[in-house]
Image (tube, rainbow, N blue to C red; front, top):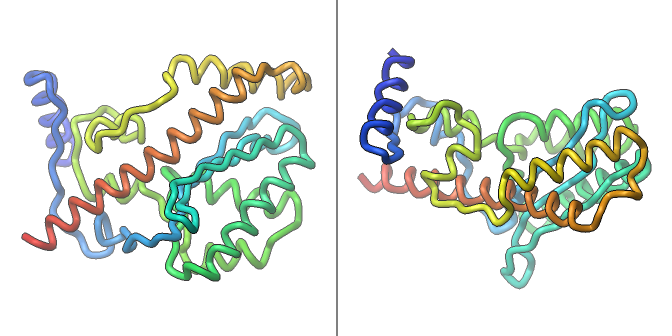
Length: 236
């Protein structure tokens, strides 16, 4: 039934030329029920990594979007092109979250798909640092994966439920063209794998940082869109 209904929506979109979605029947503990109440302290987090660097890969860019104390949307991109920089970027992010939790005890870290919390666990083990802090975040379920929430909240006329495919429904437009982003990502990965990190042009670093900002902003837009759908259901 699930596959049939998914196919029906895809055929409907191809016939009409317009993307369509449906809200799925509510299930206790799934979908909208897994979406926390928004907090001013919420963080939208994304990592870029390369699994072919050294032993266990490398997380070379930490990107996170948040609202500062003046209410301004702020993006931070921390590059980590060496193991030393990777540890420093990891510690900086965890310390930022812990300090922010003091002011916003109800904050959550939103991401899309399970890569980010898995990478955080790996980084904690690889560098033997911030173990207590990461354990606290994981036990308190501070990380919120928007992928399973989306899959159990809506059915959409897409072939895969990637965040990029869902952007057409929540109205998000990227600032960095995806073809350009992929080209620059390949340059970064080639430089990291060859050990020639100093040869990366500034244009490439700017484009990749912008691409990751788009990912974080897309997660924010998706969260807000889902929250709007939930509010409509509650009112109805």
